[in-house]
Length: 597
Image 1: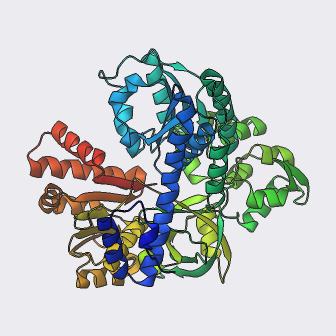
Image 2: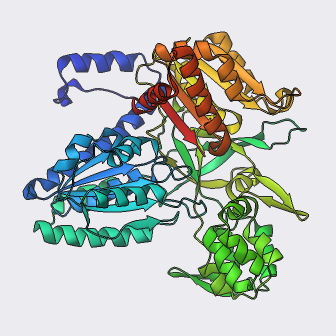
């Protein structure tokens, strides 16, 4: 597919713009032109949504809703975008913005406000919501007595601080005098039905308040837009091309390099995006749960609007490998176990238990009688897992690559696996895998390709940086990239070693620092390498470098963040408070970006 420009059909481009486009396209290969075509189409689609949002509301100019999203992985953005389409179709003007792009000075002028925000880490706001979140809790926040608002909070009930950021927004808006149009909606990972119901209630209220009438044109166009894209609800069936173990035979880790064919789907992605993977649970695990419950696997159960066997429900529709506090509380009551009840009430012990046990474990340790219908009714829906994409489409064309660590534990002689990682590791041949791209606008290469980048990615956290360097290599960018990589052992766990060496040789990668924690008596991690190179890291930051971190959130990302604060304070001659402000400024300028899990 070639990207061509017909000058006679380009009334929106000036002569100089036409010349620039022509110069660019003549320098690109057919593969690069195909990628650019897909990228522009995706950008155009998003621009079309924003244009609709404003245009459809022109007939009811006095009725205006501001819709803000704070999103780490894209779910909040997707909900807000869909909501903007629906509300716009009713003739109500909507301003749709990321919280990162919203001017806090505008807050006192708002009439109606809806906030859609996820919770990140231990009750923290996602990166693009941090500034607004802090502003609303500060003394600078204005009185908002005339504001009517709504909050949709996204979270995961398997974490202790479920929907905390949304709760914070709700509480702070109330304290400032704003009044809620609807009660806050706290969403778990399976949220679509609840969001649709809340959205309809909001729409009815806004339509009544605004006296607006539907716009048939807007409905038709937004339907056409939404029908063409692959998404979480409408995934693409890609074919597995490669499933290769890339750790050594003596490694304590089983890490796979996965390649999937996108065929003629025209799916496009950018470095920094994630791939959503739908998976089936392990058949052996399903059989074990059926046996523990003394159930008939062929017994029919109702799941939503469908009637299926309990085995099929557990295999493809219900979450088996991740526990939630609600699951523990339910099973404690069912089994009448005092031990499990006490565990459910102890937050610290519960947090550890949730991280190290699955449904089959509690059924084994605390037996209880259960019907097939009750079992599926009390398990939450299976949801896809997100993996950082490890390839650039400029390099691999109609493929997408992943770097996947197989999660495995042995408990009481039973092997326990992560749901999606085990599914991918067991995939073979040209197996079909249901996938979709989740755009991550909070993890992007700098707009200026000459900008220096510092990348910290131990273990599978190195995946997006492989994509970054592939992108820069094809684009001809050299000499401004620095990678910090870590894993237990040099000989067994040096992921993509040959590729990094080739990039060093070609000049695409200018510096590489590694930390193999178990190759010496004293453990050495990436944060130690950062501190050792502190003076040079500070120099790069002073020269405008962007700083990226990807990988484990609970330990590594916190340690790297602390190391960054320490080296900024030491080599910048700053106090602790000044260093904190410096790093916060990096984040607000999108020069400090994290993709952590």
